[in-house]
Length: 120
View (cartoon, rainbow, N blue to C red):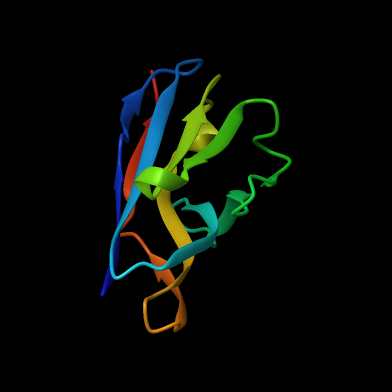
């Protein structure tokens, strides 16, 4: 079994910063691509940023220059540093990872989601 657990969300004022973490645990042989998604009320889930196993990154246009995705492979953990937050960044943020387990089975896994609210 593999689990992803997010942490670091909360309420922040516009212009503020938050750092999200996503820790993977369980029967993990290798973590491939990791990503952050978000879903605002009444909207579809959208990709925020992704990072490959070698560190290559990709960002949604709406967060470029404000968000930074990173990972610590030794800790099986991914981060999302969010700066200059705007009210439109308010959403539930989800961690996603493509993981190979010790049986060499590959699967996509999701965290439970964490709320980020940007409001004055």
